[in-house]
Length: 313
Image 1 (cartoon, rainbow, N blue to C red):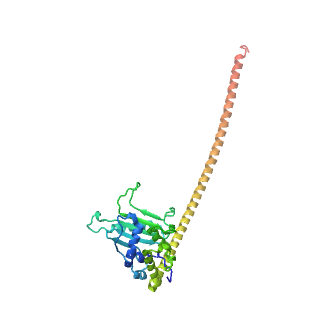
Image 2 (cartoon, one colour):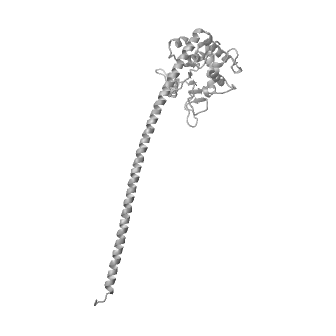
Image 3 (cartoon, rainbow, N blue to C red):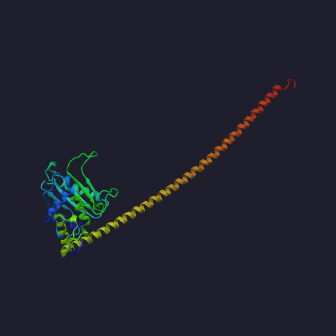
């Protein structure tokens, strides 16, 4: 290829899986990714929003996911997401729910609903505390009992995928999307030597060799770079605000701690003063008790003296 092409770029991704000429690639991809979770393999699909090169030239906000329906009326969505943002999990769930709910037209009952499968390839780690690259979310309870077998959401974090030996078709596709930009179309490795992967490389080569297609690719790359820059700025700004809030909170807590320390010191001084007063009162009470005891002794002495004195004295 004249220029390296990254299959993770949204226009390339959609051309790979959303172009009418690559319908068989989409079928292979869906079977590879969804595998045993499908009631039966996908054999035919109708692409609901086919790839249109002109969209990416004239509209930087083009719809970049791939939506399809198979001959059993099951629905599929596939999307590449290179930049994470804080609302991405909500967006992932919403797009699945939206696609699922759009099946019902006016007057239709719930039994018209068919399974809906949403596949997301992520360029950045979303679940950073989890080392696994594949995450499959389905409607199940805490004992793994299915509420309704109507599809699910499938997330694949490409940065975490590190299989050196390709053993499954799922791994083959994930490795292609992760490493495809660095592949040489004229010297493909063994794991790329399948009809589907060679066809996928043909699509990449078309973006590299055709001037208009390469222009589309470059335009999308530039747009995505801008989006990443904007997202980083937003993240930095959000982090700065969070740091400022944290600093204010630390300052507030420090002031509060200082006030509590001063109050504790005041209470300690007051307690010490009360202790001193109590000690003085105790000593005074002791003094008075001693005086009373001495007075009583003197009184008793006087009584004894008067008793012992002769009557004629």
